[in-house]
Structure formats: C-alpha cells, structure tokens
Image (cartoon, rainbow, N blue to C red; front, side):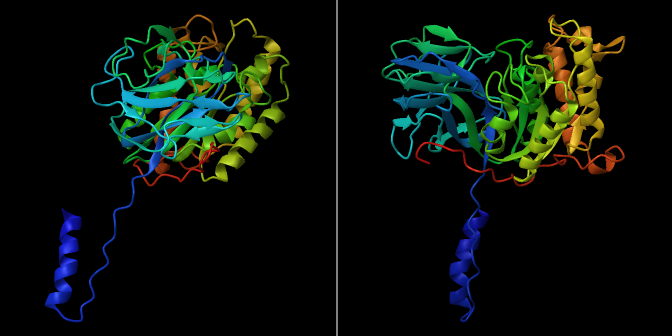
Length: 426
C-alpha cells in the first residue's frame, strides 16, 4: 500500500506543480538467502540406479522460496540427476503435503549432470516453508553414476522408491517402500525470507548427534535452532561422526572442508567449532596441544577473512569410553586451557564445565550420558545447546571481563553475504 501511494504521488505532483521533479521511488530490496538446513558429506555409498530417494530434512528457519544444494563432491564419476523435487512433508512418512510438491530446475532444465568433486544448486523454487518444517527432497538417479556422496549418520529415516522413474513427482509416498538412515546427495537447503542469516555448528559426532534419539531432531544444533528461532537465525549442522581437526578421518579434515561445509554457505554470520576429540583418542593420536592451537587459529583467520565470527567450544570428558587414557586426558586438559585462555576465538562456550560430573570431572554427568561415556543423550544435547546459546546472545555489556563482543547481537541485522558454492554450471 505504501509503495503504491508513493508511485501515485510521483505521477501527480509534477503535473500539479510545474517544475517539480518527481521523487525517486526505491524498489524494495530482494529478500536475502540464508541457510536453513545442512549436512556435510561424510563418505560414499553404493549408487541406486533407477531409484528415487526421498530425503527428509528438518528446516530451522522459514521463507518464501527454497533452493537445494546437491553434491557429487566425493564421487568419482559424473552424477546424472534425472529429477529433483521438493515438498513439505504431510506427517510422518514419505507423503507430501497436498499442493506443495514442486519440481526443481537447474538453469531452467529439469536434469543436470554434476562433475566429480563438485556441488550444484537448484534454481530458486517458489515454495513457502515455515520454520521447523520437514522438507522432502527427492532425487531420482536413472543411471549408475558410481559412488554416491552421502551423509551416513543422519539419525533420520528417509525413503526409497526402488523403481523411481516418474516417482519424484508423487505426492503419495506409496512407491517409497524402503527406508534408509542416510542422506543421499542432498547437502543443504537455503531459504529466501526475512532472516538474520545463519550459524554453522562445525564438528564431529558430538555435533552430528550421536547419542540423541533418532527421528526427533534433538541434536544440539537442532536445540540451538529452537532457541534462536525468535532471532530468525538458521542453524546449519556441519558435524561428521569420526571427523578430525588435524587430519582426514571420516570425511575430509576440518581444515580441508571448512570452506565447502561452513564458510561458503548462505548468510553465515557465526561459526561454532567443537572439534578435536577424535584427534586425541584416534589412531594415530595427536598429543601436541600447540598443533591444535595452530589449527584453531587457521580456522578463525579464514572465517574472519569472510567477516564471520567464531566461537570455540571446549572438548568434553570421555572417561569410561574404551579409548580413554590418562595421557590422552592430559592432552584434552591442555587443549581446553588453550581454548579458554589462548585468545584464539572471539568467544568461548565452556561445554566441558557444563556436562562434566562434579564428582568425577573427567566423566560426563550420568544424566547426560547415553551409556557410551563419550556422546550425549537428549538432555546432554540440550545442555550443550544452552551453553552455546548463552554465548551467542550475551549482551555486550554483560560479557565477562576480557571476553570479546558477542557473536550474535540481541536482534537480527542484515546477513553476511556468503560466497557462492563451487557448483556445476554455476
């Protein structure tokens, strides 16, 4: 209404008052893109030629349109995508909500071939999506394109139509007769809307969600998304179970994947780093605390170069887990001391102090332990989310002496323009 009135005045005033120049009418700025969901490629699985995979993903923030990121990053042969659709999920299971299914395109085409080592992004798909919605991203692969880039530890049931030709466009999920607990090819969903950008949770199995209840979205990044919803900040989960900071493990090392899984994502304003425990307890183990500090400083420098602030999270206890030793515990304590006092990060979320057992500080509090003494159950995930949330939204005047300014202010501001991803034909 307001813009219409201004346009009418711009036409009438010069006619009524000769010599008066019509005021310039500013067109509304386009709504920005922000990341609403992510998973990081963790490896490859067997291709499913002829099948349609209906991936179920849980959005953090909503918008008026979506675009989907699909990956052949770890593949060795060109990936032929015969059809990709998106839809809101009707309820539990593979059925799409009536009237919401849309066919995604790639520069206007319904099919695309993605080279090995590359990602691609769909054209914008007009589809209003609410915050905390389940989105169905269906991918039909007509051919055997070789090893399929996937995320192994989805903790989310998705569905497969073994005879997938023409099934990507089905609202009814009856053809999706097989279930799987991996995400195939899809690695991100961006939304266009009134958002304040996104926060990337970057780490290993603790961030990936091991120990939390499957199909309930109770990983700590999910719980953080609930707490940040009022600020319209998306939360992206870039955790990979088995991932390492200093060298490749499950998936590329943190340093190797930082751009693709964090810095290149849409609208990123903050990076939360909880990574390093697999280097301490893995084989070969890394016992030089200075190497961790150097790696963290490199992560921070690269994020700062993009205008992204970084929160470091202390490494949490794991005594009782089979790989724990007193020597490795000493390394963890040294690394945590560097995280807390080394002035590496813009802010520190002390998860160690929150989840450890006061009666035995090298163990997780029993109320947060799912039984393996390393990961967190749903209550532990919520405690980590609360710890990170307090640091993200801490007002500048309330920060402890000597601590840097908060990563995210009390209210939304313009999002940081993220660099576009490396993609096929884009």
